[in-house]
Structure formats: C-alpha cells, structure tokens
Image 1 (cartoon, rainbow, N blue to C red):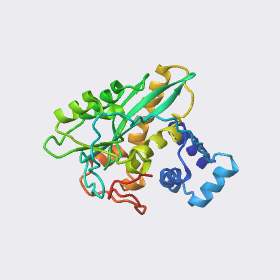
Image 2 (image 1 turned 135 degrees about the horizontal axis):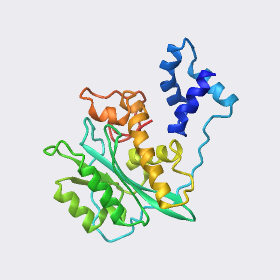
Image 3 (image 1 turned 30 degrees about the vertical axis):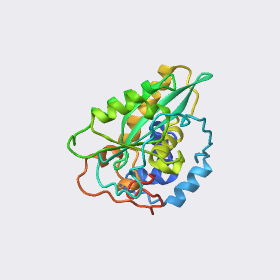
Length: 262
C-alpha cells in the first residue's frame, strides 16, 4: 500500500514521528496519487500494522543549581517573542552511550524553533555548553538587535567562562526562577522531540556513533519536521521567512508567542 510505503520512507528519516505530523507530510503525495485518507483513517492504518509510537519517560538529572554562583532573573516572563534572534533557549540532556552517559547541549531559537547550536560532550561540564554557544554565535545575522539567552540555573550556565562569553557578545542573560521545566518549555520540548521522534533515546555503542546520530537527528529536525507553532513550516524555513508565523494551537505558557512547540 502506497500510504504504508510513504510512512516507512518518512520514518526512516524521523523514526518517532507521530500520526499528526505524518498526516501533514503524507496528505499532498496521497492526493496526487488519487488517494483520499483522513487523519483518523491513517491512525487506524498505523494501529492495524502496529506502527503507532509509544513513548517512555526517563529523565536523569542534568541540572545542578545548588551552587553559589550568581543566578540571573527571568527576563522572558510574559515576553512576546516576535522574531528570530530575540530569545535563545538552552538546555542539556543525556544520551546513553554504552553503560555511561554523554551530554547534549542545545541552543534553540525561541521564535523559529531552529536548533542553532549543539555539542555532544562526554562529560557534564561547561565545555560542551561553550562549544554549543560558539556554534550559535556564528549564526547571528542581527548583530545590533537585543538578544536574550534563557536557560536553567545549572552550574554550567552560571559559570564564569559561560557568562563572560555571553557578556562579550552583548547578550542579555535570563534564567528560570526555580528550575521547573515549564519555565523553559521550548528547550525541554526540543529535547523530547529529538529523543522520541529521532530516536536519540536509544543506547549507542560509542561516542562517535552517538555523535553521528545527533548530527543527523538535528539536521532532519531542522529541515524536515514541520511545526504547528511555525505555520507548519520546518524550523529552517521558519528561520528565513519575513512574514509573521502562525500558531495552530492554543497557548498556555507564560511566555507569549514562544511557549511550546508541536
């Protein structure tokens, strides 16, 4: 069946993509082939062939905020995020490698949801965060505009080296008030998408194997996965358009215009 063949092809690049996004990507090629299929029918087809995605939750602690370094106030409460390079959201997550962990540092543009900086490091240290920041800084195109860097209160983001680099780039520093996940929803959601839809939650044999999977996952996330919060565009597309992005869901976050993504 053509629909199943197309699902297989898409899942080869985005293994954990759910029914809603699959339907969005399949609708046009199915219509061109004269096949009419609604989302409910697609869901039933996936269920019949045992292709529905089941998510499992496992969240080791990567944030250590019980330290004496300076913690900065939250600058993005109720802030309308209306353009790219207005707010960057940052977080770290674990990746299984053998019987140990590697740590993935991510920086995401809060408006376009594009991952603009990342580093997979073998240790839970500031070095990986700095490398992700350096990658993100190299993408900047609006040098004169105000940019806010928002993160949790982890020791890596409060470190002297990290804060120094942000200040040298004239970037305002914002942090969560308490470390709750809802205060950094976009970053947390990106972590979940990469792990569940792009299968970064599997156990890799080596650091290099994990790194290759991370690079592919982030590339496909940026260029292939449409977002309901970005006019159904991919993050790379959303990062380039000039017209305002349209959200296709109701916002519940305290950060207006940049709360969650789907």
